[in-house]
Length: 307
Length: 253
Image (cartoon, rainbow over all chains, first blue to last red; front, side, top):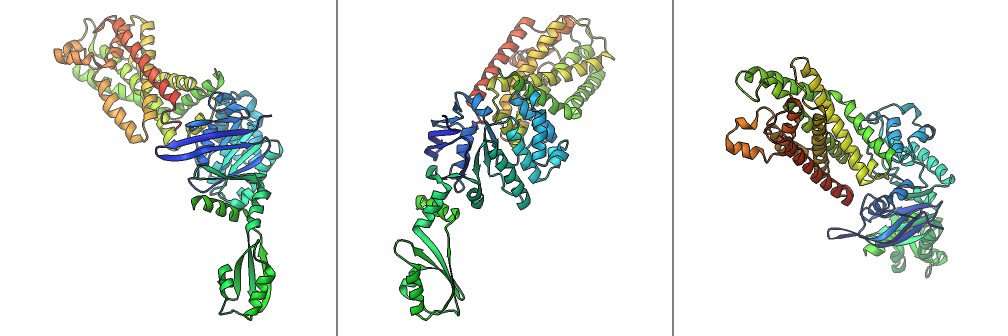
């Protein structure tokens, strides 16, 4: 069975900059997939190559088994892209824009009911006849999502869909996207809000400097963070002035009577930390361990490559 | 062929200029009629052109063709550069439209706008001047071919330009001077020999001269030569446009 998106050894240069360095990955049908990476990592270049907006130097990309270069008509029929920028055509109303977009894909006649459903699902029904210029940023973002879905693609790429969107709208957008996923769509998400990726995505790829630095299930990625270090937060009855050299080596931060230590799970134990603190006369009134989140993993993995 | 997709893009382009028809159709008609009023009033008694053809009648086909040229160019070029600058060109680039369908849709809408303006001038001018009609088919062919040349050139300029300033440069330093110096207001036989020869290097001259032949049955050069020149220019610009679109030049980096 063909994967939803297959990327094989893709290279892309912009002048002297090697934006993608032989990147390969496969996204399965029905997945909710996260594509993460710092700014300039190559995420947008990769998305543009999948969408046919950018030409790769070498390599091969397919969407639902259709080559994005040699079989671009079918690959684009299978793909909906929500762009990062709030771009719109100022000449048309929301409904006109959706009708036009459906027409480009040869689906003008059968799109009427689906356009109504999209408008309703994205809370845009009362704005259907408004010109795009009259809409707020959040509404424009929703129209972009409707435009990406108007030809009923199997695969949907959302490039930073919640950038600059308020909390309430963000939550309603995710409900809509979750419904899409439940309906069988393959969703590819890029976001700077790592907690979004952590909450939504089943598998996550982390790209840095044009290379894939991690590709794993969310659980396995989080386990990587858990496996190496752990942060322990200790609250003392009163501040202390002195730490032994071994405690100073583990110190992360200190604020009045609250101290954070980073323990290496292979060599340190919480009991030895407590004993060391007791030795210097500290009285512990609270102790907490903090689980690694995706942000820790992200920082560690991108730091490794940058380093 | 994605016929519906191509028709949608063509129709969208028509609606785009239709929504601002005051600026895109009525304003150029008004400008041409003002030229007609001023030049015919001042020069009617002073400039002789073809036998039995009044200067005012001579002027109308020239003004029609000048407006067709300028508006066909403006349609495709302004639409493209605007879409590029605002970023909404992405909505067309993400679709399954081929480069040929993209070209034909933009070309057809440019032709429609050019012909709309030309026809508008013709209808209004007909109320005031009695224009002969030597060969209507010839007129139509020249109007369509000429707007196709300029529609194609507009696509090339729209793809090449990265900002509105580039487009203004193209319009004011290439299209405007070439259309003004192409025999709109005079027969090239009234020019000194050097300027006559120079005029024959201006492709717009052949568009206007061939078009004028359709009205009066007389022209400065053989109308078949004009048709050949205009056809070759269309072929060249169409090839260049299709090549640029196929390569994704400045559209798909």
